[in-house]
Image (cartoon, rainbow, N blue to C red):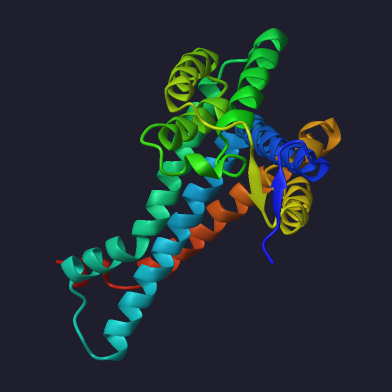
Length: 254
């Protein structure tokens, strides 16, 4: 049977606390990812760039060998089209890493006071229109859109945006004249799910970057490991060049 829990019930209070905890952990994880990129972004970008360079060369070698094994001439235009299609997803990933790293490098550090204000506004808004706590607003014309904007503003520490959104939400709620009695279906199951989700967040990336960033020795070792990986990719890329150069490239691509 579906269980309906009223707002003042202890189960609802726990449910609310777990929802807010989950969102806060996600935000913290996002901030740790930004810090991770600030420290390792350039190394990560170079490593991935070299990795896909090696993948590209391996695919070129495979294409050439396939043509020769079938007694076919190697058509450079066909190979270019094939490689471009094969590498498209890798190139998109590289662009995303570059974009994320750039955004992280430009991220501003907030004062503790502003961080406190952001959290307070978000918690007030979450208690009023979070879709899991206030499912009755799902069909509203404006509130679901406001909530999406609130989450983005919260994740990106946009204090001014949150302040503006709080005004809009208050105005909208004044118009709706909604009930103060809140009900959540199957709340025990949802509490159990939230507890598992929060445990998963804490034990996985990007939240676990916290422990790496807080340890200077681990951070320095990570830099060394990433530089070693870059050096290995550079050597591997040169080795692949030697293989490619063994083919009569100019003759095949003439």
